[in-house]
Image (cartoon, rainbow, N blue to C red; front, side, top):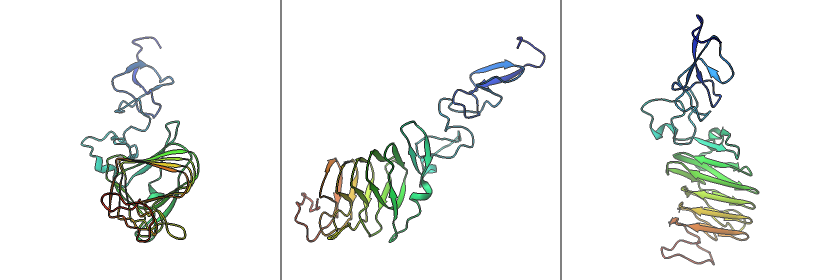
Length: 238
């Protein structure tokens, strides 16, 4: 279009293709060309998940561009981010359990599961792949609700980061690994609080095959009355 044409209109660059443009990057034209939009209300034109009216993801960001945003707006959210950076909500599935009736959650084979503040009654299992399950603000609790192991790994590589893992009762006969049970593959427990779990063997965790690496967790109140495994200094059963 010729500059200064009578019907010229301001359009805005939409670099992330979410339908909302960057107010700082404007161009005049008679009609929009690819990559330009009439709306200039995007607050982050580098992220296609951030725009006015966007659903709130569990990522510590004001996805809907609201002012006065607070991290508590994300409470109860659980989202999966795949290796291509595509996000999908898992909130409904992870929120379906109740105390005494934890919901079974099968992890994918890749990506990161981001867990925001809240208590989720779940029995998480992993069989293959490489996945991280991580707390965003640090107040995310996975509870077995008094039944089964909270986390079971039978294959693959799992990282648990910044979570509280509690309320598990172990799995198998005899019950093993109230908090975390490893029967294959590997798990890294990084900065988690593992507490108030019970089992016949391994109240906090039990490894019958595979491996477990523990980095700086706090263990409290786990019990395994018939365990043959060692105790830590606080009496927690590994």
